[in-house]
Length: 604
Image 1: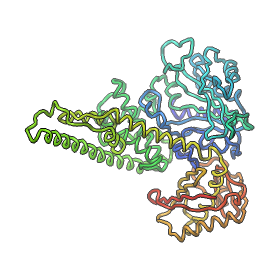
Image 2: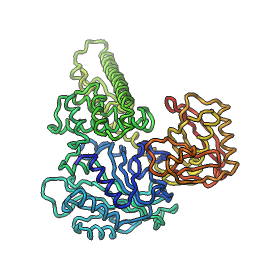
Image 3: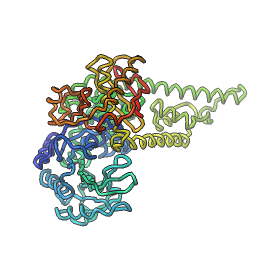
């Protein structure tokens, strides 16, 4: 079975169960600062999981492209990927545990013909907040999974996405991928048991007191990894042997002269290169360019990490060539084909820039060597020194080594290798480097924690006010700047402020900023009612609603109107009347990227 056949079977199965297919959304979450990338199919559905009515109903399904970098250190093994496609189905207050589990079992065993003997499932084991999910365990047993293949895991729990909100236990499905005899009991630490599907059972809401109460709207949110499932169906223990990876691997083999699967180290290098280039292609296709902040920083890291691993197998000037097969593998992604030239150019440009950066880093080594020799000669009082191969010529400090890693992209192993190459004995403070790295990782974790504490996922009052204000801001920009073609290019909203990116070629004047504030505040003071309607994308366009009218929309959309001032397709939370927003104030206007301006604003 190939990728397109698997997708077709999945969508057709859930359509037969009265689900509506929703569109594959961008990797860049719209109006949701809780994550840098879409990491699961549920991200575009957060408002509906929180209770908003979806235009297409209560049963939904799709295949969603995703990026996850949390376990990037695992990439290089047989099953982990940075970019992947997630097949998912959702119930928004409709069916619950029984139907979700029965659907999962039926699709795996009846449609995909996976022997139930090779399946095992996990359920929530229980903790101080909620009891063991015996209900799910009983349903699994009833459909045909024996008790010895049903086991409890304490961390089988999802959410909430913010401080409060929907959450609940989940139940995972595992497949025994090894060709060896199946064990009688399940050991979840055995890598031969591969997770292929996860059903999240949102039956609770965490309130502001931190207590878990029964949810009024109980939801189902499932996710099935396409890559892992495809490998299983074709009898591969290694995901990278399937059709969504092999053309890329073959290109790496051709360019490097190395063979995949023969040496563990080389095989791992090839997987990392293939994975990171594929992820980079998809990120660039969704409008991101390499930079030193947010999504652009992740993209830069992925490209440069691929280049670094490329040097281990003698690859040079290769990113464009390795990217080429990706466009053939994913020919059904129109936006990928449309942006092919841009994607390849971005890869080549970043590779050229990184190679220059590497050269700068090498000069640092040379200067360090020179300084060490001069210091040694000085200590000898000008006497001739011939012991360069035996004597200690100094040390690259932990901070210097980390600067090479952080600013110039040198991994520690490359720093050690270059130090060893130099004539003499330049040491590297590895312990100091690890301390600096640990400090950096802690800062990154803190920043990520801050990101997850805010945004639409917590649906806070402040966030709702600021989100509604972005509608007024977009309409005001078109009026004040006399440009109806201005489009939103991103939004990041926390309870403290909004950040709004839009298309415009120049810096705004102080007078324009003042007029924007006055116009937005005038609409707030008018106490305009915010009205939600459901209609087709064609009707929305005919009525003048803002939106980029491509294939991103489904059969129906939600349109929010604010008096006669703003009409916009949206899925975020909104106030009922503009008088709830408060006073709008722009605190900064700046460039975001070429042709894109950024406004930061607050309400109080």
